[in-house]
Image 1 (cartoon, rainbow, N blue to C red):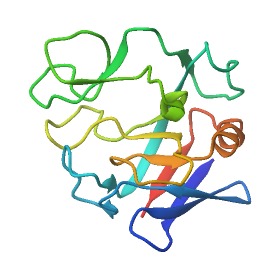
Image 2: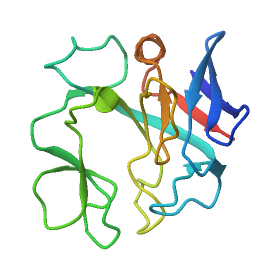
Image 3: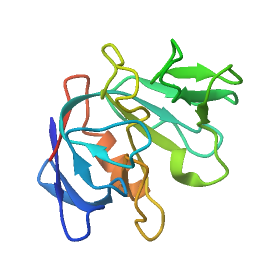
Image 4: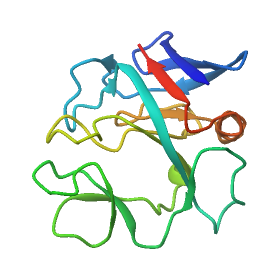
Length: 169
């Protein structure tokens, strides 16, 4: 299954098409760019695999999908420190490096699909933590991820498997 993300309107507004459906989504505050760098707020352009899904088991049931699925644990985080060996990887907090916690009070990370960007192997400084995740109520821009309404993310996830790819451009 291929997902196609195309810009629409403001640099961070877009739509995601998949399986004959089109969903509104938010992109990074810096728009889409092929030259993504850590902290630039851009969504990377290109075609990428969808690796696996993460979800908050305390807030929702296990989502239906053919992608691998993991429950987010209390101390899970994502390393965003370019010099650290675990850069752009799921980590257990605390670590001696900058890392973003995945258990947030806001619902943004209740459901995450990990996009295979800069992960095989990670290039320090090229960008980390690029996900499909739950959008803010007003589709506010993200730090580089793609955000959809929760029902749309769940509908999309139900169609995905290990061969699924996302095309951002």
